[in-house]
Image (cartoon, rainbow, N blue to C red; front, top):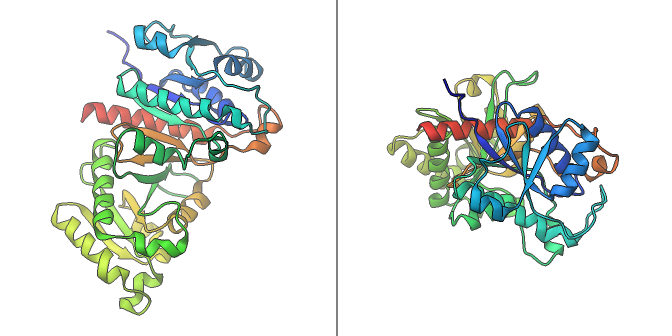
Length: 347
């Protein structure tokens, strides 16, 4: 009987001066019997780093042109493939160099191509430094926005998730109605059409990529005490509640709005599949307190699967040399992408 096919995961290694290349190598190697990782980055640099981490790590470099012509089937099972995206400047750990900005951005283009062409099943991204790409002369606001633009996706949703741990009795998923906005701009950004589409995207992706037949979504209010019947704000009355009712009429299992300060309790979360927070810190402060370094960032609404770690480039750790970075968030990101790929294939 043939061995089951392993999910093929494209893994961009992120900012070369940060911990991205190290955690990508270590996490991918540790999970090589669960997934088939395809690293995307500078092959020579990754080979040097791999030898420093563990001489047992075996890599095989290929060009994107070779992959276009022959695919990835020729890579031996005992090696991890690296699609070579050469850097422009020598890497000094902990020191950013804008000369490498365009090469880092190119790894994202290659990763998107690998999924669109069917060579890989999902993309996992290591952290990159936005400033390096902007300093290279390319306007760049982040992975999420870039993937949306490149895949012609009009609206995506940022969701962070974590597995059960010592601080959390069950898995937790928190999606965001707004992301990286100044707090003063959040109320105006919560518009009925956008909020309804956000709820629909969460519902569809939890069903199709997480295998949940009828996801239960809890929605947080914007204001303290969810507006206190209008005394502390009217967004709940004028926007959030009508949108929830509209989504319910469309068959979505969604409820709220709930006061955010009491929503994150076991009695509410026990049967919930996702919490929709109105703004970044409202939801992510809770999740990161319970799971920082163990979580995964997931972009919902894309035509492809994309996950990432829940932390940044950690230049200070990279400057200390290999062995200081925690790979657990990267491992969770890879495993989550694999599960989503399997669910999407079977749906």
